[in-house]
Length: 236
Length: 289
Image (cartoon, rainbow over all chains, first blue to last red):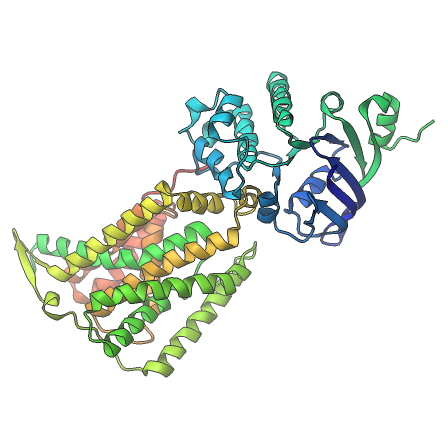
């Protein structure tokens, strides 16, 4: 069944249009990767879905059977779609544990709670009382993912969670996603690293200049087709 | 000349009232990043509200706090939702212009309703009672005011650092956009923050009304003192704001001891000195990132 159904999504920054008629579908429990070069509109797409981007319009933005195109981010989070934002954006005056427990504000109960987050990220319990500014990038990313999971989303959007992290940390992060998916949570990940994207995703959307250039299953792609969609090189 | 112990004790006690003036401003600036130029006028509104309550029902002014504080909290909640929330954004001029306008409107509304007469609330014998502590003679009422300032600071500190509401207030202050992703409506959090600040304004207004005369136009002077206390103490720190109030109280008391004409200017000079020497205040909030 379709969890998220998007038709003709446009987004603007003032007079500048960033997304052009995006169409997108995410099934229940599915993992989608969105790839594309810098400035292709990946972050704007996720921010529009999560309700953070104001200058947007969509013919349909249907999540779990509801039109959410006009809703605020907090209402969308309460319905079960949230975002791990680019650059983590943790609450700097809150401790690690407070950054996690604030996810309860969405008012959703489910599989994810504080003990389960600590089990998923065994490094975090001993850091619980620390200010998040004193954590390493990888640890901060764990808190950011944990905070989003604490809202018990049915669809989790992840914006460049591998950015600036050591490869071994990224690998661990993606292994954790298997467990997240095991709980029936669907994922949309934005990735610069195409190899990473191909390995985790059920389907891939490639964005170029704010529009969907290509969408298929990873196995149906050839390297050349991705390169063509990614960089806009004309296909031979 | 009065003895030094007396001067210091009077200064600290006066500072208690200044701290109460400043606490609400500190909260509003700390959480909403909003500079409310009508802050002082709302203190005066609270004083007139207490005056009306006490005129209508023969109760002690301290009891009137129980009516005025919730009333002011409600006013703060509605003002934030209906007006101040619309001023948020990157332009710092908008809140300044609008709250300045609110200040003018409030002063003239008070003038229309209550006339320009100076008023005062009588709290009975407690106003003149004093106890002798060593060399200093300590007024009972100023001690009540200082204790209230301490209690309010502790209460706010507790709300902010030990409750789920405080966690939301701090998170919203950190990043009002991202709190939406965990299901928090930042506009509502701001309204609650404003309600708390206005409740404190209510307490401050009643205590001010008992301490001395008031009229519709004395708001801006209270705002100035509140500003100075917040900045001396360091932004976003309730204990710092309390300390800032005490510092101004002390400075004024010492200035007045030298020459009564120096009372007000002494407070401003100390404020100026702090700005020059420690622009972040005496107790700046721990720097984040």
